[in-house]
Length: 130
Length: 140
Image 1 (cartoon, rainbow over the protein chains, first blue to last red):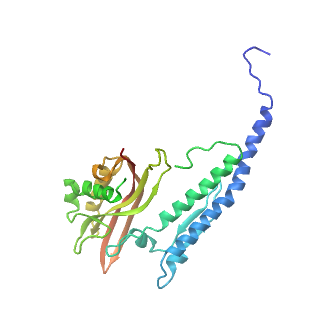
Image 2 (cartoon, chains in turn orange, green):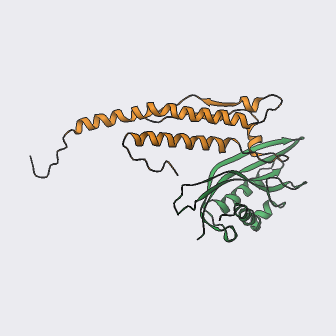
Protein backbone atom coordinates (compact mmCIF):
# COMPACT_ATOMS: atom_id res chain seq x y z
CA UNK A 1 0.00 0.00 0.00
CA UNK A 2 1.46 3.45 -0.86
CA UNK A 3 2.55 5.42 2.23
CA UNK A 4 0.19 8.30 1.58
CA UNK A 5 -2.95 6.21 1.33
CA UNK A 6 -5.39 6.10 4.20
CA UNK A 7 -7.58 3.08 4.27
CA UNK A 8 -10.82 3.27 6.19
CA UNK A 9 -11.89 -0.16 7.25
CA UNK A 10 -15.64 -0.49 7.28
CA UNK A 11 -16.25 2.59 5.15
CA UNK A 12 -18.69 0.75 2.96
CA UNK A 13 -20.68 -0.27 6.02
CA UNK A 14 -20.56 3.25 7.42
CA UNK A 15 -21.76 4.71 4.13
CA UNK A 16 -24.59 2.21 3.95
CA UNK A 17 -25.59 3.07 7.51
CA UNK A 18 -25.53 6.81 6.77
CA UNK A 19 -27.72 6.26 3.74
CA UNK A 20 -30.24 4.40 5.84
CA UNK A 21 -30.00 6.68 8.86
CA UNK A 22 -31.88 9.72 7.51
CA UNK A 23 -34.78 7.56 6.42
CA UNK A 24 -35.05 6.17 9.92
CA UNK A 25 -34.88 9.65 11.42
CA UNK A 26 -37.51 10.86 8.98
CA UNK A 27 -39.85 8.03 9.81
CA UNK A 28 -39.48 8.65 13.53
CA UNK A 29 -39.70 12.43 13.14
CA UNK A 30 -42.88 12.45 11.11
CA UNK A 31 -45.21 11.54 14.00
CA UNK A 32 -43.52 14.14 16.21
CA UNK A 33 -44.05 16.85 13.60
CA UNK A 34 -47.62 15.71 13.00
CA UNK A 35 -48.40 15.88 16.72
CA UNK A 36 -46.98 19.41 16.79
CA UNK A 37 -49.11 20.41 13.81
CA UNK A 38 -52.21 18.93 15.47
CA UNK A 39 -51.45 20.76 18.72
CA UNK A 40 -51.16 24.01 16.78
CA UNK A 41 -54.36 23.32 14.87
CA UNK A 42 -56.31 22.67 18.07
CA UNK A 43 -54.85 25.62 19.94
CA UNK A 44 -55.52 28.06 17.10
CA UNK A 45 -59.09 26.77 16.73
CA UNK A 46 -59.62 27.21 20.43
CA UNK A 47 -58.20 30.72 20.38
CA UNK A 48 -60.27 31.95 17.45
CA UNK A 49 -63.68 33.34 18.40
CA UNK A 50 -66.89 31.69 17.31
CA UNK A 51 -68.48 34.06 14.82
CA UNK A 52 -71.84 33.80 13.11
CA UNK A 53 -70.57 31.21 10.61
CA UNK A 54 -67.79 29.54 12.58
CA UNK A 55 -65.64 29.74 9.46
CA UNK A 56 -62.65 31.21 11.27
CA UNK A 57 -62.41 28.14 13.49
CA UNK A 58 -63.40 25.69 10.77
CA UNK A 59 -60.77 27.10 8.42
CA UNK A 60 -57.84 25.93 10.53
CA UNK A 61 -56.38 22.78 9.01
CA UNK A 62 -53.32 20.61 8.82
CA UNK A 63 -52.62 20.16 5.14
CA UNK A 64 -51.12 17.11 3.47
CA UNK A 65 -47.62 16.08 4.27
CA UNK A 66 -45.15 17.02 1.56
CA UNK A 67 -42.02 14.96 1.93
CA UNK A 68 -38.94 15.43 -0.18
CA UNK A 69 -35.74 13.56 0.52
CA UNK A 70 -35.35 13.37 4.29
CA UNK A 71 -37.51 16.43 4.94
CA UNK A 72 -40.79 16.19 6.84
CA UNK A 73 -43.40 18.92 6.37
CA UNK A 74 -46.80 19.50 7.84
CA UNK A 75 -48.50 22.73 6.95
CA UNK A 76 -50.90 24.34 9.38
CA UNK A 77 -53.16 26.77 7.55
CA UNK A 78 -55.94 29.16 8.41
CA UNK A 79 -58.07 29.16 5.30
CA UNK A 80 -61.10 31.30 6.14
CA UNK A 81 -61.26 34.23 3.70
CA UNK A 82 -61.35 36.82 6.48
CA UNK A 83 -58.52 35.37 8.58
CA UNK A 84 -56.13 38.16 7.61
CA UNK A 85 -58.59 40.79 8.82
CA UNK A 86 -58.76 39.10 12.21
CA UNK A 87 -55.02 38.52 12.43
CA UNK A 88 -53.74 41.79 10.98
CA UNK A 89 -56.57 44.14 11.91
CA UNK A 90 -58.94 46.49 10.16
CA UNK A 91 -59.37 50.23 10.40
CA UNK A 92 -61.78 49.61 13.25
CA UNK A 93 -60.33 46.55 14.95
CA UNK A 94 -56.76 46.12 16.13
CA UNK A 95 -54.69 43.17 15.01
CA UNK A 96 -55.26 40.01 17.04
CA UNK A 97 -52.16 37.93 16.31
CA UNK A 98 -53.12 34.37 17.04
CA UNK A 99 -51.84 32.09 14.31
CA UNK A 100 -48.16 32.99 14.30
CA UNK A 101 -47.54 32.88 18.05
CA UNK A 102 -49.25 29.50 18.44
CA UNK A 103 -47.90 27.94 15.24
CA UNK A 104 -44.36 29.07 15.95
CA UNK A 105 -44.52 27.90 19.58
CA UNK A 106 -45.67 24.44 18.55
CA UNK A 107 -43.19 24.28 15.69
CA UNK A 108 -40.34 25.06 18.08
CA UNK A 109 -41.59 22.43 20.53
CA UNK A 110 -41.73 19.82 17.77
CA UNK A 111 -38.28 20.74 16.46
CA UNK A 112 -36.85 20.37 19.97
CA UNK A 113 -38.41 16.92 20.19
CA UNK A 114 -36.84 15.98 16.88
CA UNK A 115 -33.51 17.38 18.04
CA UNK A 116 -33.72 15.17 21.12
CA UNK A 117 -34.49 12.18 18.91
CA UNK A 118 -31.49 12.89 16.69
CA UNK A 119 -29.26 13.31 19.75
CA UNK A 120 -30.52 10.01 21.11
CA UNK A 121 -29.02 8.43 18.00
CA UNK A 122 -25.62 9.79 18.98
CA UNK A 123 -25.58 12.76 16.63
CA UNK A 124 -24.88 16.35 17.57
CA UNK A 125 -27.56 18.95 16.89
CA UNK A 126 -26.73 22.60 16.38
CA UNK A 127 -28.98 25.58 15.86
CA UNK A 128 -32.31 23.91 16.58
CA UNK A 129 -32.75 25.69 19.91
CA UNK A 130 -32.33 29.26 18.64
CA UNK B 1 -34.11 44.54 32.87
CA UNK B 2 -35.54 44.91 29.39
CA UNK B 3 -38.39 47.40 29.22
CA UNK B 4 -40.54 46.07 26.38
CA UNK B 5 -42.73 49.17 26.36
CA UNK B 6 -39.66 51.32 25.81
CA UNK B 7 -38.65 49.12 22.87
CA UNK B 8 -42.06 49.73 21.35
CA UNK B 9 -41.80 53.47 22.00
CA UNK B 10 -38.41 53.50 20.30
CA UNK B 11 -39.85 51.97 17.15
CA UNK B 12 -42.79 54.36 17.07
CA UNK B 13 -40.44 57.25 17.79
CA UNK B 14 -38.10 56.29 14.97
CA UNK B 15 -40.93 56.11 12.47
CA UNK B 16 -42.61 59.28 13.72
CA UNK B 17 -39.38 61.25 13.56
CA UNK B 18 -38.76 60.56 9.90
CA UNK B 19 -39.82 63.56 7.79
CA UNK B 20 -40.18 61.54 4.60
CA UNK B 21 -42.54 59.08 6.23
CA UNK B 22 -44.44 61.90 7.90
CA UNK B 23 -45.03 63.38 4.46
CA UNK B 24 -46.38 60.11 3.16
CA UNK B 25 -48.45 59.25 6.24
CA UNK B 26 -49.42 62.65 7.65
CA UNK B 27 -51.76 61.35 10.34
CA UNK B 28 -48.91 59.80 12.24
CA UNK B 29 -47.78 56.54 13.78
CA UNK B 30 -49.99 54.70 16.24
CA UNK B 31 -49.97 51.62 18.43
CA UNK B 32 -52.71 49.12 17.55
CA UNK B 33 -55.37 51.60 16.43
CA UNK B 34 -55.25 55.00 14.78
CA UNK B 35 -57.10 58.02 16.09
CA UNK B 36 -60.60 58.65 14.84
CA UNK B 37 -60.65 60.31 11.42
CA UNK B 38 -57.12 59.34 10.39
CA UNK B 39 -56.85 58.34 6.74
CA UNK B 40 -53.11 57.84 6.15
CA UNK B 41 -51.11 56.47 9.02
CA UNK B 42 -48.77 53.77 10.25
CA UNK B 43 -49.77 51.13 12.79
CA UNK B 44 -47.43 49.21 15.04
CA UNK B 45 -48.59 46.21 17.05
CA UNK B 46 -47.03 43.22 18.73
CA UNK B 47 -47.29 40.01 16.76
CA UNK B 48 -45.32 37.68 19.01
CA UNK B 49 -42.42 37.62 21.40
CA UNK B 50 -40.13 35.07 22.92
CA UNK B 51 -37.04 34.75 25.02
CA UNK B 52 -34.07 33.08 23.46
CA UNK B 53 -31.87 30.55 25.19
CA UNK B 54 -29.92 31.90 28.12
CA UNK B 55 -26.35 32.63 27.28
CA UNK B 56 -25.35 35.21 29.83
CA UNK B 57 -25.78 34.12 33.42
CA UNK B 58 -29.53 34.10 33.52
CA UNK B 59 -30.07 37.14 31.37
CA UNK B 60 -31.88 36.32 28.17
CA UNK B 61 -32.07 37.69 24.72
CA UNK B 62 -35.53 38.64 23.64
CA UNK B 63 -37.05 38.70 20.20
CA UNK B 64 -40.13 40.77 19.57
CA UNK B 65 -41.97 40.49 16.28
CA UNK B 66 -43.93 43.60 15.43
CA UNK B 67 -46.52 44.05 12.76
CA UNK B 68 -45.78 47.41 11.17
CA UNK B 69 -47.90 48.60 8.30
CA UNK B 70 -48.98 51.67 6.42
CA UNK B 71 -52.74 52.13 6.13
CA UNK B 72 -54.32 54.48 3.62
CA UNK B 73 -57.84 55.32 2.54
CA UNK B 74 -58.44 55.06 -1.20
CA UNK B 75 -57.42 52.97 -4.15
CA UNK B 76 -54.40 55.05 -5.23
CA UNK B 77 -51.43 52.81 -4.58
CA UNK B 78 -48.59 55.32 -5.01
CA UNK B 79 -48.57 56.83 -1.49
CA UNK B 80 -48.85 53.52 0.31
CA UNK B 81 -46.19 51.90 -1.87
CA UNK B 82 -43.82 54.74 -1.02
CA UNK B 83 -44.71 54.57 2.68
CA UNK B 84 -44.21 50.81 2.80
CA UNK B 85 -40.85 51.22 1.08
CA UNK B 86 -39.81 53.95 3.51
CA UNK B 87 -40.78 51.92 6.57
CA UNK B 88 -38.74 49.04 5.23
CA UNK B 89 -35.74 51.29 4.58
CA UNK B 90 -35.91 52.60 8.13
CA UNK B 91 -36.36 49.29 9.88
CA UNK B 92 -34.80 46.39 7.99
CA UNK B 93 -31.29 46.00 9.41
CA UNK B 94 -31.65 49.53 10.74
CA UNK B 95 -30.61 51.06 14.04
CA UNK B 96 -32.76 51.74 17.08
CA UNK B 97 -32.09 54.03 20.01
CA UNK B 98 -32.81 51.83 23.04
CA UNK B 99 -31.14 53.74 25.83
CA UNK B 100 -34.35 53.94 27.85
CA UNK B 101 -35.19 50.29 27.30
CA UNK B 102 -32.28 48.83 29.27
CA UNK B 103 -31.10 46.83 26.32
CA UNK B 104 -29.19 47.01 23.07
CA UNK B 105 -30.28 46.12 19.60
CA UNK B 106 -28.81 42.94 18.16
CA UNK B 107 -30.74 42.95 14.91
CA UNK B 108 -33.90 44.38 13.44
CA UNK B 109 -35.01 42.60 10.32
CA UNK B 110 -37.86 41.91 7.94
CA UNK B 111 -39.69 38.64 8.61
CA UNK B 112 -42.60 38.48 6.19
CA UNK B 113 -44.87 40.69 4.17
CA UNK B 114 -48.36 41.95 4.88
CA UNK B 115 -50.59 43.27 2.14
CA UNK B 116 -54.33 43.33 1.83
CA UNK B 117 -57.26 45.51 0.92
CA UNK B 118 -60.15 46.15 3.24
CA UNK B 119 -63.56 47.38 2.23
CA UNK B 120 -65.27 49.13 5.11
CA UNK B 121 -68.64 50.85 4.70
CA UNK B 122 -67.99 51.29 1.00
CA UNK B 123 -64.51 52.73 1.49
CA UNK B 124 -61.36 51.06 0.25
CA UNK B 125 -58.47 50.85 2.70
CA UNK B 126 -55.07 49.54 1.76
CA UNK B 127 -52.80 47.87 4.29
CA UNK B 128 -49.15 47.29 3.42
CA UNK B 129 -46.20 46.49 5.59
CA UNK B 130 -44.43 43.61 7.18
CA UNK B 131 -43.59 41.81 10.37
CA UNK B 132 -40.23 42.88 11.70
CA UNK B 133 -38.24 41.01 14.30
CA UNK B 134 -36.37 43.08 16.87
CA UNK B 135 -33.86 41.11 18.89
CA UNK B 136 -32.37 42.78 21.94
CA UNK B 137 -29.94 41.91 24.67
CA UNK B 138 -29.99 43.39 28.17
CA UNK B 139 -27.39 45.99 29.04
CA UNK B 140 -24.89 45.21 31.76
